[in-house]
Image (cartoon, rainbow, N blue to C red; front, side):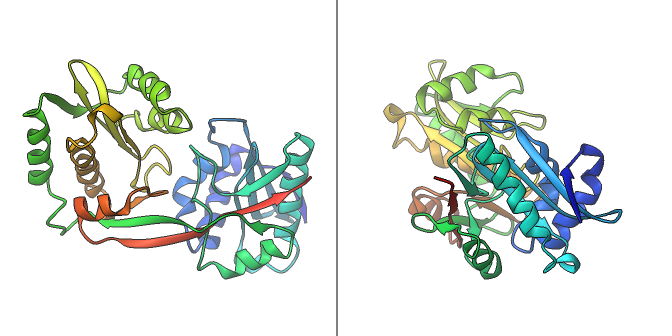
Length: 294
């Protein structure tokens, strides 16, 4: 078995590994994004493990984040995963990173951590000196088809209600870089990076403006593009309580319904907001895990 850097020419084989190995996340759909896609900070580095001519495992890091690590089921228990993990840890340590985190890079994350049901991986990492970090995190699933609260008619009604208050509600444009700048100034963090990613054709961003100034936004497919994930979303403090967040959420959910039965809301904030806006939802919980080098 040998480990070497992964190249884009290896992407089809790497995608097949992610499809076979990742039971909890649809990693194969976003293989290019997770293995080779940019992050807000740092450049991604990806490796593959070969047995003979066959690619049997893949892994990638970006800055202090382990983006993904997967081994073909038939090749497990032969040290492939351990070799890939050691390669990732060594690369991060040599780059001066004091730690690695699993999956949860803001702006380009497969998930907010390890699914709590993935006991095998959690235990495997713990045996290699990875530890749990903080409280479990939650995503929500929202049904976007056959849901009486997620319809084009309701989305249009909510948009009209905020228009009557003097707001302009519309889909953002591909070239709307001023929105990214405004979000960076008001909110910062990784949101501008995700927002820029969602401003690709077809645009998955809806905005609200008042007297020409941005006051709220919501996006989908800014991360895990093609999976129908919702977020980020935000409302400027002076405009909260006007129904803007709900109107923009519904606009995004209607978009997602064109291609998916459910929408996954990542790293949720106020759960009651989503329950009120879109009805009953299902939870998905994750464990944040970290390996400290110092």
